[in-house]
Image (tube, rainbow, N blue to C red; front, side):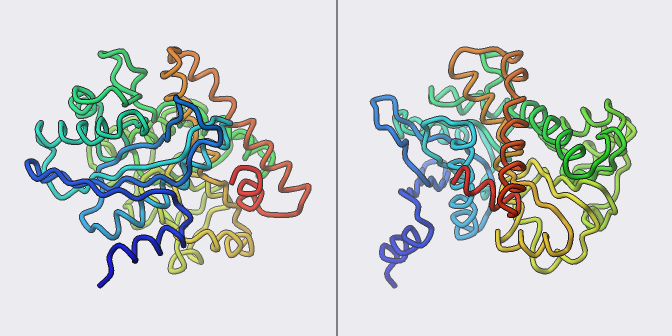
Length: 344
């Protein structure tokens, strides 16, 4: 067994810069930190950016996911034209989130001494973020109560709606208000997206494992269906807004949507599936373009901006998708191929 050699070989294969394992023996908090890329221009203010999420019991699955998520952050940095490197941290979800546990997450972030600028991600809420932030100054998107701009889910959804208008106009040739849309996951992004689309008059079908969230959505007039049926819905747009790797070789031929456009990261288990989707007549909209409004909010917060500014700037997301669509049509390639050529 050669664990060090195995890690180095993995880094060579994935072309990532750093993999760090962290463990606090007092709280049993374990974390994996991956740096996919470094800033193109070195300076004393150079940082890597990415969320910190609470997910996975299996360490190998966490590492695999962390590498993919860090790559997505590199792409988002390139989409938004910022000099940050791309990174991600995953705190293993094998312990209770006690106050001491959350504080040790903050200690882990603080230990990076400003190299890593993060925001809470899937698995953590704003109250837990406040506890984490009590031990570190390198966390964004905190509660309004302590000077932050709040959850990035709202701004992610704001950017997505700009993109959905483009998708309906340029790819579906119909008004967004006349589209039927399915949403998988009603968390901070999915619920915010659903609320906006309901106001616009769209027909929405959604699923979630959380009954309270489903009940809230039903009160808005959203049709709730079992999670195992969401991929089978015949819709204009299918929007996965929970975990990644939703589309795989086992379910790809069961899809009945025209467009896949989600707020989740790394929706495809393997990006080679993009061409298979294209052959099936389904257009995949790259998630790292579509959902970068959340990262945009964090950037606005760092610069001392307001939530109004973050919402206003979210139109940038739609502008970037326009570039991807135009480049795709000019070069007769898929949207994912276009986006990777522009932003990888």
